[in-house]
Image 1 (cartoon, rainbow, N blue to C red):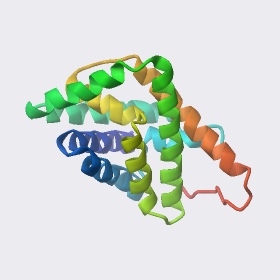
Image 2 (image 1 turned 120 degrees about the horizontal axis):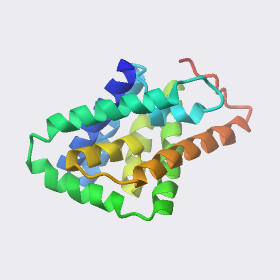
Image 3 (image 1 turned 90 degrees about the horizontal axis):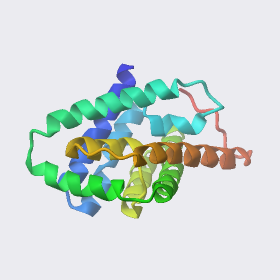
Image 4 (image 1 turned 135 degrees about the vertical axis):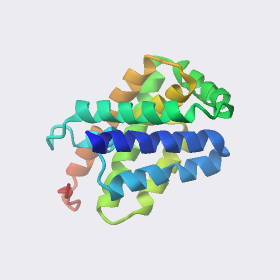
Length: 190
């Protein structure tokens, strides 16, 4: 459980960084969290869910740990009151999405997260930064990051459920598409 709590905390710190930084710089630097998640083999829901049906990860336990880690870090970071207004603007925009857009944007983020983690496992470390930067600049929805924005703002939205499902569907579809190509060795060491 500590590996999933740590991963959630790292994503919350990256979300905080994104809120504080200019959008392009924040999008690029957000990738630090995924790099350390991969480096220390932490359990991040969006990095593992692509293997659903293929590997036996405790997905709901990982999601719960990510939630705990993100909310604890957000609770501590809320002491910086200057961040609350900017986080509230982001969280309210995510909460205002129609459910189907939350799901679709979650699917595209799931694809990019699968590619990011898979590229890391194959030695292409820059893939973490590239995929994370792309999903942020495109406005796709990452369930744990969105949870962190909402935690910083103290805003809740049922769209998180659609985003979680979208992240899962996108990641699994991406993996299934890659499995159709025998030149890819999908037996990742974990």
